Image 1 (cartoon, rainbow, N blue to C red):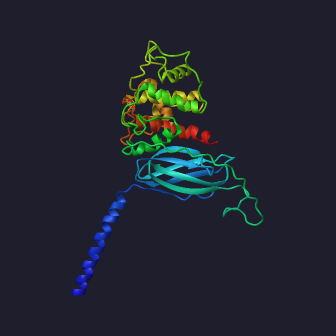
Image 2: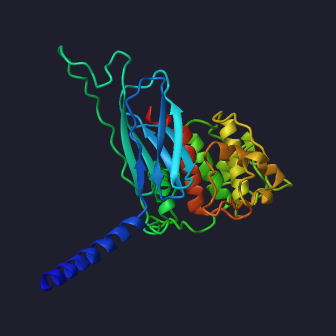
Image 3: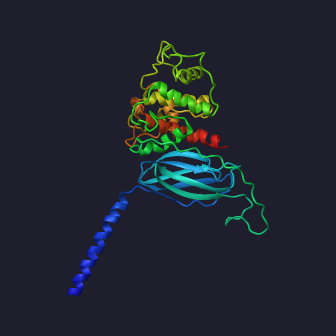
Length: 336
């Protein structure tokens, strides 16, 4: 009887130690990915898996380190699925698929091989010449800010764009992510990114709004944006540079810029945004632009299935949108 009692007590102690660990593990969001078999140029790649996150960013990184593919997916019933086709001239080597959000990511590797290589790996035998070593480019010092830890969904975007010099903080150590961004500041960031990739002219001084004062840091960017038709103003040749910008106006300007840069040819309609709970609040002039960005994966909506078109855009939200634009349309050009 005594031995039986000791055994029961021991079992209870073991269970009491294991159960909390199980509970903690279940609460931690994670990303698991299915294995991807080796591919050849021109073949389809399927990316699928499970996660507790509401949405995930999918990045496919080439062997050279540049981003080849980017997409943002909604997670349905804990599962996500995506696919793309490798270009016919895809470089050979090991690719890395990264799926997740912020620090919560899952990774899986696959190889792209020449048509003549065996599925199990490169053929053996014969000598090989030592590959030519190319000088390594210096890695820029990663820029971060003290006040962005409470914005994990935007941290990677803010740090990357700041490191690239596309965005700046409100000081050397702060970014003020929750503050609303002004119309002038947003256009300054957008034009700065486009200029980095030679998508816009260097001068816009011959075309500007009456309320944009010459000598201000945003004078040239707003002039360029007006010259290209990215911005139309608020009427009577006014722009209201210090005013806050609504999310729908921001999306309209992004879509116009991408069209002018010949990055998108997509069209869109109300049907493309009707799934959002507040789609009816989108102004008529903004429907097509927002629909295009939704189809392109730049806008994915909030966790409550809204896009908040009338809300003012924050600095953190702006960084995330511009980061998605950078990854999808410009990252590969920078690395090439």
